[in-house]
Length: 184
Ligand code: ADP
Image: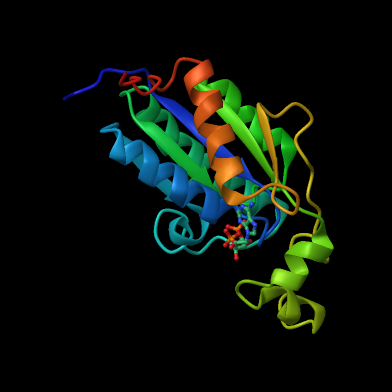
């Protein structure tokens, strides 16, 4: 069945290791299972193609987000549910992208730095603390939390299932995703 629905960009922002990719993947699977059109822009992947060559200065980080936002906008206006997972540490550029896209749901994936660092999923915090990586968000580069995100997932306090249910519930509530039919 080809379900018609308005497009939307779901923007997962937060520190490295906060849980953006993990939540995004579970949300993606659920939306695909429901037969909806989904596309993904993952910060790490995008930096190997669309924004290859950009670094981690504020100017480069903003350009990275602007390009992701540009593609997200094209997809969103064509009825796709776009899932973006990117640290996207600067508030102003996130808000700029939000304005441009319109149908935009910001999910603040939040866990204390100490928790993200203890998880150290990719071993990057260790390298940053050792000075092997510079300009690492949370260590020697800023992260500006959203002031009014549509959702916040506290991944140190809430289970993955809870976080996923919150995201799907919000998308249903806002009319971007049809609620699953209740079979009596
Ligand atoms: P990011 O994409 O933000 O860098 P990842 O998703 O790669 O983060 O890693 C997050 C880590 O935190 C994973 O190892 C995941 O299993 C763990 N985790 C623990 N609780 C949660 C939760 N509630 N939601 C998402 N991830 C969680």
